[in-house]
Length: 137
Image (cartoon, rainbow, N blue to C red):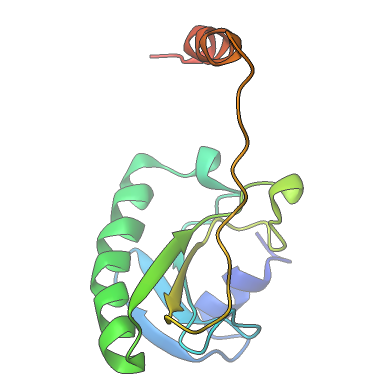
């Protein structure tokens, strides 16, 4: 896609702090990191979000993310990491090119987990049934 900032980064038209590249994947430091060492893992083939990604690209991104996450932990001294993928604007996706976040986490980084919500009685069963009906095999 011509106007996609990530496609331009992959092509070298926009500079980035690249940490990894292979035939299918490009990974670079996020310019607005949650914590220092926050990396974006991007498929080279343009896709809008996770639902739009080719199965081969999903595999390539996650295999690369495993290598990179271990390097991020060692390189930053992090005690853990989060993997995250925002899909569509309502979920916080800012760049419409699929990308996986590797966010190093530290015991004292002050970040909180998402708040948990509870189902009302019988609600979980209804939600489960609706989701099952929408899964296409």
